[in-house]
Length: 323
Image (cartoon, rainbow, N blue to C red):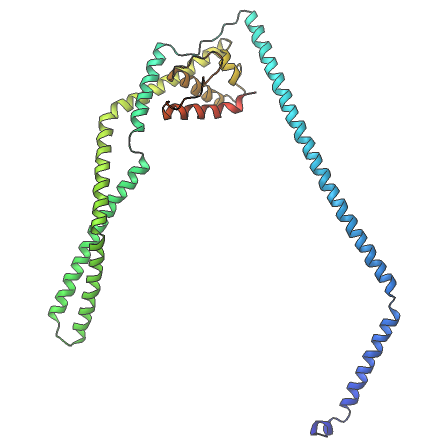
């Protein structure tokens, strides 16, 4: 036996007794545990889990069905409301017409046509100018040239200062070695500026020419553009006055107007009024006289970009007002 066995003669016996006791306890547990009820509980739990999952799926299906029915009812209600609204407006129009109500004249007269033409000419001239974001890009090229010149000047001064330090220092001394290192670094920095010189200068020259041409156009067209702004403001003021007169006199709107904006403004009149003014301005600007379709035919491929943009923009704004 080794020394530990001599010092602890009972250790092995104690371990053996503990192992026997554990074995006996396992047997007792196995003997007392009835596997049947445990398995039954597991089966019940599995059935309840499956049933719960089935109920959850049915709830989801029922919720989706309710949502679908609600959406369909909402759609049908909207359609019914729209039909009733159109019918009421038709009846209102015929009743008012039968009692002698006048139809408002919302199309442009000669004075409005002149204002619209001036406003459109000014807008066309302004559209040919360089947009401000593009101007800022070209101005950045000029700023970069100024920065380059400042940096290049400093790099030249650094090379000169370093070369003087080399010339004034004694060969073989630490001062000379430090001056040589500073001169080499300064030359590298100066070389970097020289490598970018042509690119920076060319970009600045091109941008300066573009900005100069744009400045000249702005100066030449300033009065016509300003007149266009004044005419556009005057046109919108006159059109608002026509709309206000129609409402105050309880006149019937033209058919093309009623079809898209109704017989009059809603309680929240601001957006309605602005859309109506945009529509009237579009008609007078582009000579639209269609008695049934507010915006007339869609612009063809030969139409100006401004006209196409105006047509699509106003059509989108009219959509919420249509029944």
